[in-house]
Amino acid sequence: MIDPDRCLSAASHPVALVALHAGYSHSSLAIRSLAAFCWNEPFHAGIQLFEAQVNVSHQTLLEELVAWQPRLIGFSCYLWNIDACIRLAQLLKQLLPECRIVFGGPEAGPRGEALLRAVPIIDFVVDGEGEAAFRDLLRWQFAGVGELSTISGLIWWDQGQIHRNPIRLLPVEQIPSTILLSSFDAGKPLIYWETSRGCPYKCTFCTSATDRLRAFPIERVEQELAVLSRLKGKTIKLLDRSFHLGKQRTLRLLQRFAEAEGDLRFHLELNPDRISAEAMVIFRHAEPGRFQFEIGLQTLNEPVLNAIERQMEVSKALDNIRELVAMKRHPVHLDLIVGLPGEDAAHCADSLNRVFRLFPEHLQLGSLKLLPGTPLHDQAQTLGYRWDPQPPYEVLAHPLLSFQAFARFKRYAALLERLWNSGYLVATLMRLVPHHFNDELVCFFDTLMEQLGEGIAREKMQPERLFGHLVGFLEPWLDGDPLLQELLLWDYANFTLPNRNTPAWIAARIDWSPPLVVDGSRRRLPVLRLSAAAVSIINRRRLEPLQAGHYGVWPRQHKRGKPVTLVSLRTE
Image (cartoon, rainbow, N blue to C red; front, top):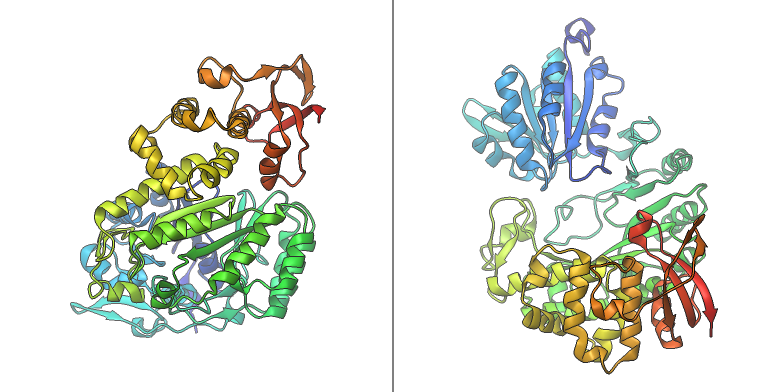
């Protein structure tokens, strides 16, 4: 029983929870869930949330924290913010020497002992779910209730020895809903939500490999959805590690998402071989943009999938992704990993080539990270890995993949971002790679870097300069391929209006319209003639198909991120 007299008030026992984000649009579900779990505690009113971006000066945040005078500060630690959290905690310990510092999160718990030894100002580290641990630590701190040895997942010093307490998972029914408590930042474009915790899979590279899967009651999830449906223009990013928890539950929730009022978008992680025919029907009939899919393929090499204990039927996964992409209704983001055990450069390149042929909206090629606490990290030395011991723990080499090969795949990743994910060269690449590079993206990238140098992947450059380099590189193929010419002009015109920096080859091939009323103003637009063959490629990414003809193009750069406006001048 907590003694209210010992606990006193928020003013006498303030607490700070700190989250440092990778970008402005982010907010922290973790620290909100910790605070919500203390909702009925006498010290709840003293818990204050502090959030900032990781890549900006933290002077203001430091001043705010010192002004709050917390007795305990908790940091939510991830790969992208651990160094900043340590630096901020060190400053706070100098200014508030009596304040206890607690680190938690996936970048703290698995290596808690090492953190306590390396950073003496950290008093406690929490591993695993933090709700009950944080509450119990505050009860011990402010009311003298309980023992440190009984707090779930706590890593702590006692008489010169570090102790690690076992993790006890809460029944999900005991975890309060931050949505129903209105404890979320409605001012951010992204709202984080969870309908389950843990993962049904055991991928050896993943921090969720040891987390038992638990689903929140469906009735609670539907109540939360009713609250979220009142928001406008938000992306609801589900943190569920896999949105497949039984067919009937999955279909019920997908149908609710599809029917939700307003203009919400739901970002889901999917296992592509588990998508049912019934789910495909829901996706096909949902309004465009209602869903956004993130799919971690990682590799298409089945022996490697077996080695990392990742369950995926490759042929079925690819068929389902083709169907999702062909719908043209919901963006599809695919992930591949370079450096998995047993995979050489040739097999990595094969996966990249095959996945690119799906033409997803976004394709990310990342290097393997050996995360502390994962089974693969424990096996790394035996497998012959060389890696950076500091976050983000990227692999440098392994017996089948040299450091030089890793560096080359990093350049492939940079070119993907620059030419494909940016949208700059989408139509051009859909023609160029299949017809002039034997349908092998890696062959195109290698040829591009051989002729233009690796700076085309490494150096920062304005898009006009980039197009200038590309026109020179593509000249041998442009001369004999009128369709490729049309598509390159289309890609450029979608990006920007011709100007004094426009490559001469492009400027000479674009006409201008007479003044037209576009978006309420009179403008002259660049005019493109698109053949039937050109629109057949362009329409692979368009829900509303174009017909062959002449079009005036009002590009996205001049519309502050809004979609391109097309004015049909004449169809053929």
